[in-house]
Image (cartoon, rainbow, N blue to C red; front, top):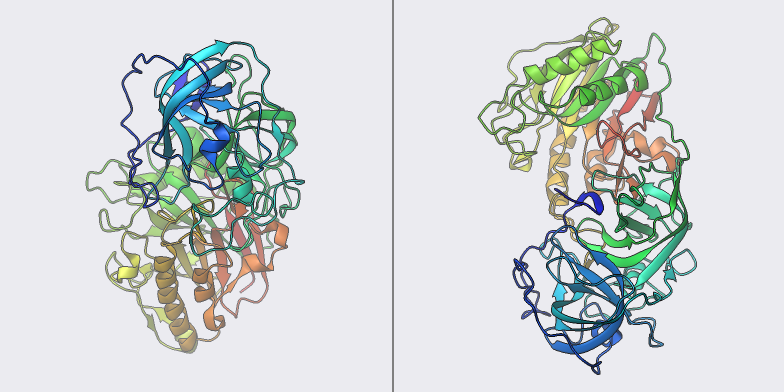
Length: 618
């Protein structure tokens, strides 16, 4: 969702939804968005309350729910887009307590009538606004229903606090088992406390590295702490639940487009000079520097990778999440995805695709067949110089596999019949479970393609693994195409609850348990079976789901065999992380594995995932 204004790029709308109040702020429900701001007489003299009194020593204001009069300050930023319109106010005479912020957001609900540099007095109600209460977000301390008096214009702004590795703590969040809202802030100990102690204040980052590309909403992420683990190509690696990268900071802009377009940055680029503005908090990334001054972009010329050429005797098997591919998508998207298959992956023998939509795309009309989507993609691959791929898939039951409503996403096998053959075994459909028959060299699937235990509740509203049997130069290969349950509903790493709840993890562990049992049965029938299980598992290499998949050595996760700085396939909120995996059975000895970085780090991308490929010699 975006909004556009004459002074800003098309940006993500900062929607203000009604929220359920927490026990701490049970009486503080934000009023509905007003159609217009009523004229209210502004204060005539400073009151006794200052901004640091409003912010206090915790995340919740000690004055929450109260009306304060004549709070003085300098306007440091004005937001006129989205539904979170208002301005930031900062006290130019701070106290000596580093835990109490000197800035606050004044929510007007309509375009503010103040300008940056105005000295003002504000009366209003102290509120705690939760951008995503149900999702566990922290709150923003605000003044709402304001009455404002402008005393003077053109005043110097308070000096910004420079955020860098010198003051960002290495520890991310206070150690607790629940809400951190009532804890006294320790800004020298914990990154979340440090940022909270600066909420609403002017901050600055200098000559900082981009770790999250510019997205469609004119946002990017930078790295302020060089102590965070750096990826080979300039990102910030997400390596464990214990210590998220502390230095990541989202950048948005208040600078008018005509004055300075928002930079189109890739991971590894630099924002040179100073980027300055109030520190906000929102539901799309947590703490965010909303710039009134943007640094200049230094393009470090990040290149899209091309995987190594396979030998004639190596089978190449790849996975690619093509992000809700539908017939109505642009020719440019089809061409970009096809170029990735042909040029960057070098036309693998088998490609498992995730997020192929049905022939009507997101239209919810009962259509489940995807032959038109696949045919259009196969034609695009041929047009890009690739082979004439054949394909196999199983249509899902309408509306039962999750994803975009109406889209009926599913996994698909593409294969090059000039290099590898598919063993068709009848009997596979959307509700029939595939099984294993025979032993030793006679081991086979009961259906190819088939779905693994599709009626199991573990797959509710989620994609079922698609398994197929192939033949490469007389050698049998079993390939499993996966797309596990998404992380929807999980609390963010910046949540007010620490450690954040990962509710979706339960279903992925259940799914991994089912697939691991299927693998164990297959290997019990033929310990020499060569299996490649791959796709979008929606989880990390250190997660319980991947630990379950690899139990008893039935599979090994190849991402663990890459150099640490190359272990990522997706970039989210400035974290380079692993969601896609290729796993192989013990008999697959020499596996040459590559995550081919062509999307996740780039402002211009064909999908949000990077594809992967493995070369094996059966």
